[in-house]
Image (cartoon, rainbow, N blue to C red; front, side, top):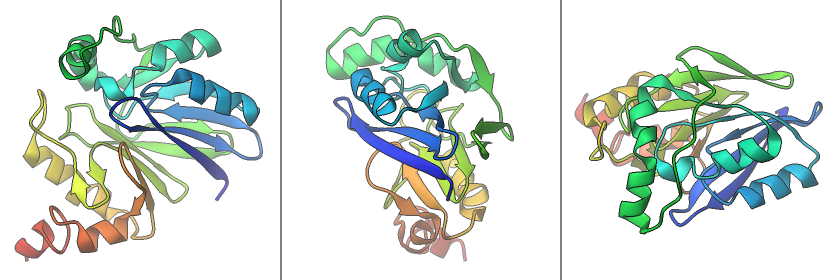
Length: 218
């Protein structure tokens, strides 16, 4: 695998922020700049990486709180799916509600990502897969044997659908009809918690796997 991945748990909700880079070219992107911009910047400097952009799997506050600091420090654009603009606009309000702090206005996107779009990371490519359910504009990034699933799919669990814009039906459809169609050995890097694989989740996930929905659908 040419792509290298550095994962940091950041912020009070222990969100996973990922630095994804081509080992040969040192070109990189940041996926879900959730918080602790200093830590992400320190890693980028230590590894001598050139960051092209920041991408969000969705617009919830715990996945975008470091975006503005990174944009200012690195002079790079920030991208999100257009259908999560309303969710993103609520980030300040939701941070106050859940954390009791004011983090200022949410970051402004410099452009938008769409289903089927490809993102160049050095010599490798990540494909955008629109996977609504946790939020209307939730996406996954897939390529080189890895999937960045955001808050769609976790090890042994799935994303919440009780927040504004959530849909249990859409989330289930996104997992079964899009994510579970990928090869079993694809490694899944979720928005929270440890890594897993598509095959493990298909077999063991109590919500959507063989021990849950897949068994009931037979």
